[in-house]
Length: 170
Image 1: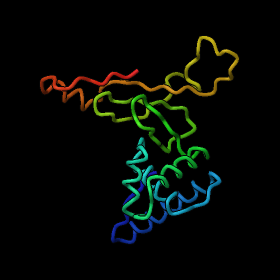
Image 2: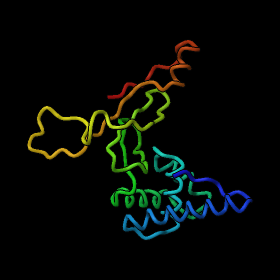
Image 3: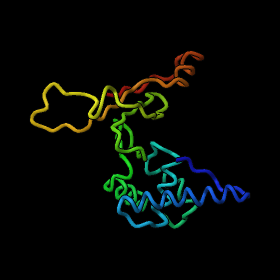
């Protein structure tokens, strides 16, 4: 779902209202009450996947100046518990949140600029990877984070002398 800014024409207003309606349905379907902070955070997360709480707070504070960072954390916690959003925790980074849930996809992170992208399941169906010994567990998902240089950072490093060493991640 792509959100658009409501423009001055009727079509933009209708589209923005329809998008708000879809967000409300998502919140209700997760068993949660629709509130202005929840709606604002979900809208911001839809526009900015893989965002941390601080970035989402910055995005919602314009529309909801009375909102606090703690309120954003509370909304994200309730969304995560309800399965409406997914929390990912790349090593050395604050927790990131996204709306893409339920498909056991993975992530790739740039070691230089920290951009994050989704990567579809490594091989086959969930959990995509099979451990050598499951130790009696019923494995249902695997979380993989790939690390490397994104295309832009590769260009930047080849077009100028090495000024920056990449951050080493596990």
